[in-house]
Length: 145
Ligand code: DQA
Image 1 (cartoon, rainbow, N blue to C red):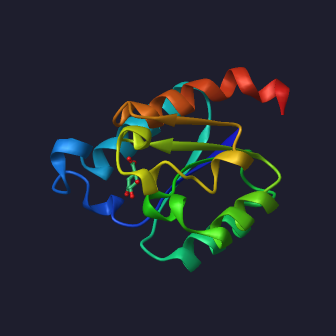
Image 2: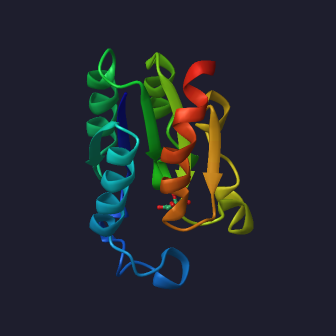
């Protein structure tokens, strides 16, 4: 099983960015834990972060035929990007949307996600554990897709 974990703009700044909301873990810390979890499930993990919408779209296109699942924290692009949603829609595997913070308890513009409707599910508000919960969910979901 191949999974791709994608991270959108500003997530490279975790650890120093709005730590009251996002905590003190860096993206590198989260990646290390995700790699550990994925290995435990015998999954191949490809990890990607970009601040550029076009790079995220190209990465999704390249994942077609390679990845079975995309776990994505699209960050601010979640709320704005039709093109990112279109790219995720063309991906034939499963998509899981994750957020570190509970976007529904924050500003109203974060309550809208253009991705949720085409995702298998959404995990938000559990800090870095949102990523870990998504990885752990996949073995149970696989037979359904
Ligand atoms: C986020 C929530 C988004 O609203 C925000 O723009 C982010 C991070 C989260 O993980 O909580 O950059 O996706």
